[in-house]
Image (cartoon, rainbow, N blue to C red; front, side):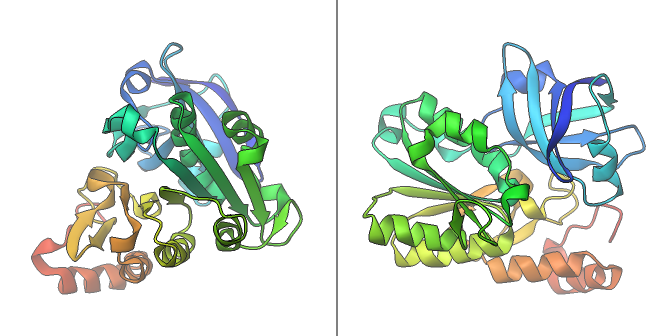
Amino acid sequence: MFKILEAGLLADKICRIVVEAPNVAHACEPGQFLIVRTDEKSERIALTICDYDRKAGTVTIVIQAIGASTSRIAELKAGDSFADVVGPLGQPSDFIREDPEEVRKRKYLFVAGGLGTAPVYPQVKWLKEHGVEVDVIIGTKSHSTLIMEQEMTEAVGEEHLFITTDDGSYKRHGMVTAVIEDLVRNEGRKYDVCVAIGPMIMMKFVCKLTKELELPTIVSMNPIMVDGTGMCGACRLVVDGEVRFACVDGPGFDGFKVDFDGAMKRMALYKTEEGRKLLEYQEGASHKGNCGAC
């Protein structure tokens, strides 16, 4: 059992949970994820790591209550426990394995959409701790759905954080792409790498813009992960013409090489039994269907 030390709401139906998991905390790196189960009969939920404390032996996750399983997790309180916390899984952010001196020569732009703010945070925190210059854009529907503003401000500084809301209820008004254009084209800011994490449609249009700006962009394909081990096949996608799986090959990929339209269409089909059967027929030997749904 994995004891929950802290649990609380960040926004409506979005909760933050700090869980005691020393082995995961010791081994995890920014960009990776873990799998949790509330009890032995529960669904496996893949969640990106929002933060970790190696000394305290804790990891922090942020989850939105959407279905039955995530709603059950959102109801947990300090003192409760998870039956399983498995990880770290997936590949860490590319810069973790690079020469720190080379990474320090770059300026990064992070674009976080909604819940994508959570997995952006540990990456930004790591880079700032290693002396790398970072700007962060957070896009959300409204002020009431904004999460982790204080944590992100403390990590990068108020002058490097740009918040925009769809309804204009807080800070800037509009989509994250408008902020990117403003920073690059109007303010003349120069970036070497962009990292975008959020809804699929957001990442698609961020990549469309950054390609025009000739700004290399990494995206995180965690929205399509289900099983988290490469067995179920839900996160199958095409990157640079090759079949990849987000949970084992990613979740980070070169955004210019990801077939977003194909991934979004597949994600929609995967939600229905008839759709899964169609995918099984279309994909042939490359199809995986061990999640019990196919």
